[in-house]
Structures are given as C-alpha cells and as structure tokens.
Length: 137
Image (cartoon, rainbow, N blue to C red):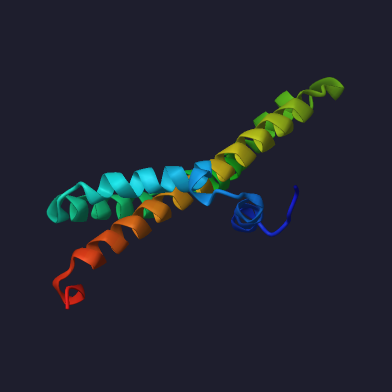
C-alpha cells in the first residue's frame, strides 16, 4: 500500500494488520540489535555509542557530492558544453540522466544510513539509561 506519510506510517499500517507482532521481520531485526547491545559491557557500549554519533554526524560526503559536482562542472562549463552539445549530439541527455540517477541513489542511501545510525543510538541510549545508577531506585 502506497502512503505519502513515510516509512513510519507504513510500518504502523503493516503492524496493525498482523496478528503476531513479535514475528514481524522489522521488529525482530530491532530486537536482535537490542539483544546484542545488552550483552556488551557499559564501557564498551559507551565507546560504541560515541562511534555511532560520529557516524551519524559524519555522513556528510553525500551532500558534499550533491552540491560539489555541479560547481565542478561549472568550472569546466565551456569544455563540457563543447563536448556534450557538439553537432547536435544527444550525449547531454545520457549525462543528465546518469547524474540524476546517481544523485537520487546516493541521497536515499545517505538518509537510510542516517536513520540506521539513529536507531542504534536510541537503542544504546535506552540500555545505558536502564543501567545507570539513578534508575535502580
């Protein structure tokens, strides 16, 4: 079912239809991640947490790619125009098509990677919060 409300709403609709929520593949995957992190000692888990934060914030190469390539092409615009538009050549259509495909794929990957990092960070934060001495009252 197509929904313009995003993946979270899509998951909600899928879970709403299922009889056995614990058998949902997305929930199983999340539970497996959580189960693994629960086996890691708190010190190591904090180190993993720091690395995950770094990964989440360090996913900037794709936006740089998305904004940097047009500027690079702008620098060489005369030579590129001569090459792409030479004698009514349709090479520019292929160039634009390939560029837009690469840009779309890398942008989607960027946000998926950022979402996975956020998931891991949330799970680790919950585990560390549960283990903190202030929660054992």
